[in-house]
Length: 173
Image (tube, rainbow, N blue to C red; front, side, top):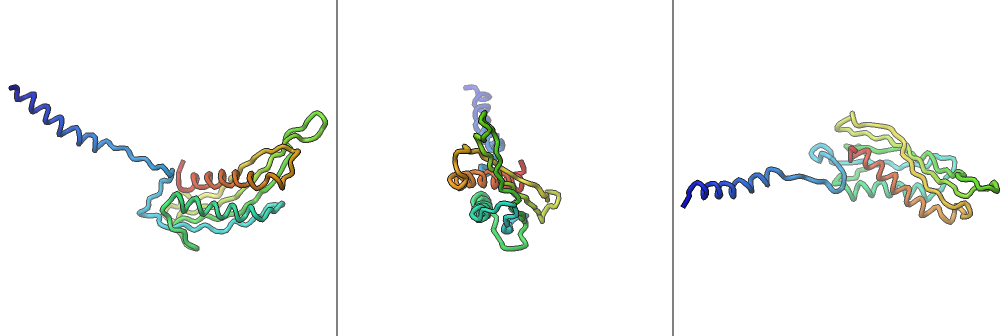
């Protein structure tokens, strides 16, 4: 019996699990990169509508969904004031524009846009503070009335904007 081969096999069997354990990879599927040792709370102020055109359900939908994304995708505690992270701002734009004109001079599609101004403060690292605008748009057939398409379009755009805000504030993309 060759003892050197036996010792080499046993050594490999003992070292292999240690190597595999040392080479683990960590993934975060929620996309956030929060240091929960420092950051424990978040304050999200109400975003008022300050656009020329006001559609009241937009404010409620946006404010609820912004809070919801942070509650669902982080372990941060939502507090009314003085959070480690603070998000505030206003809905500055809710506009529609004629986008494509047909040969008869009428618009064939209309573009609906939502713009939100956000001020973010990280009280544990002020280098990450910012003020920035986020927006999303959808187009719809001009033969449709805005009142018949705005609720589903708003839902899509609000989801997109809240994801943009989430990524800019806690995902550090």
